[in-house]
Image (cartoon, rainbow, N blue to C red; front, top):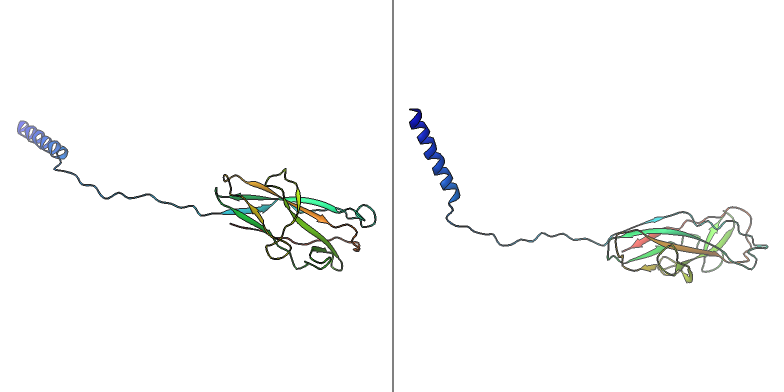
Amino acid sequence: MIRKLSLALCLSAAAFVGHSQAFAGSASAPAFQAKAHIDPNCTISVAGDLDFGAYDPLQANASADKTGSTSLTLTCTRGSSSTINLSSSTNFGTGLAGKRAMTNGTSALSYDLFFPTAVGASAAATTTPWGDGTTAGNGFAVSAAPSIAARTVMVFGSIPAGQDASTGVYADSVVATVNF
């Protein structure tokens, strides 16, 4: 009986192995593609305030502008071109016509923001006013990102000399917006 059962199991296993390896043919589905897309994208952050320090309209800044700078960090997907706009705020034109203004609540101190010569921390100031694209100048066009690495964009400012402003702490709020 054991011999008959062993023989039956061996024949069944052989039939199964022979059946599983023998195919009558094959068929293929039409090719499909794996797809994805990357949309242009950028983020922007501010490194710190543009702090001009002390402005002295009687001596140091009676005939010399007071300058300062800060920087923005721009990160974009590779190949994304962008434009950075700097808001003009509600104080625009409050002091000198056509200029931004910091206020202390009762008095205005005018200033300008300028484009950098290039992207990077070693850029210098130009004389091209930096605005929001409608007021105070155009936005700064940044060339296509060569990689996703963060890039530094300098913001240069200048308070024109000889302004007759009262004592106090002056401030203005500027919003940096990147369009891509």
